[in-house]
Image: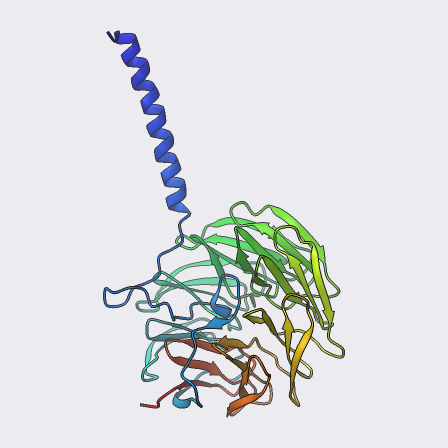
Length: 391
C-alpha cells in the first residue's frame, strides 16, 4: 500500500517531470520558424521570393520559367538611383527605394497597394516573414512593417548605415551594419537576441545553414557563428574585403573578395577546400548556385561559371561594363543583371546567351523571380515586371 509520504514523493516527482516537459516545449516552440502566410486558405505558395537571393543559404535559385523570351507586363516609377532588389510574396511585389519608400505593388497589374515612407533611403532588399516585412535603411534603422497596410510595427537603431539585407533563422532576423556588428533580433518584438562585433563594416547579407550564421566582413574575415547563442565557431581570413554575401551549398560556404578571389570552405570547420583568383576582376555582387555550378558576377568584366567542387572556371560571359549585382538561376537559365542596362538570360550549362531585355538605365540590383514573374529595377527609377504573357 502507498503511504501518504510515498504519494507526496510521487506527486512531487511527477510535477518536476511535467515542469521540465513544459519548459522544453516552450523553448522549442519559441524557436520554431515563423509560419509563412497562406493564400485563400490553401497551402503556402512555394514559388514566392521572400528575401535577398531567396534567403537562407542565399543560393539565388528560383522555380523554372516557361521557355522563350518573357514579355513586359508592367512598369512602375520609383526613386531614381535605386539599386536594391524586390521580393514577391502572395501576389504582391515589395521594394525599398532610394527615396526612402517601401512600396507594395500588385504583381498582376502593377497597381500600388500601399507605401511606407521614411526620411532615409534603402539599398537593402526586404525580408518577408509571416505578416511582416523587415528592411534596414542608410541611417542605421531596421524597420518592421505590416504587410496588410504598411503600418510601422517596430524599429531598431543600429549605430550606422545598413546595406545588408535581412536573413532569418527561426523567429530571429539577422543583418549587418557599418557599425561593425552583426545583429540578431527577435522578429516579433524587435528585441536584441545577440550581436557580434567584427573589426570592420558588415556590408553583405549573412547566410544561414545547419544552425550556423555565416558572415563576411570588410575586415577580410569569414566567420561562422552559432545561430542560437551568437558565439563564434570559427573564423578564417581571406585575401581581401568581403562585400559578397556568403553562399552555402553541399555543407560548404563560399565568398568573393574585392580583389577577385573566390574561396570555398567546409561549413563545419572553416577548412579551405579551394581558392580561385580571377585576374583583373572584382567580386562585388553576390553569387548564385545550382547543380554543382557557382555563378560569380565580375564587377569589371564578366559573369563566371565555376565548378563548385574544384573552383575551375567552366565558362565566361563577357560584357563591356561588368556585373554589379547577383544573378538568379531559374531552371536551366541564369538571369544576370548588367551595368550596361541589360538583363541577360544565359544557358547555365553552356554560357550562351538565350535572350536579353534592355532597360533604360544601369541594373545594379538583383532580379526577384517568383510566382511566374521576374521583377527588377534600373538606376533611372523604373521597376520592371516580365512574365510569359503581358495579359
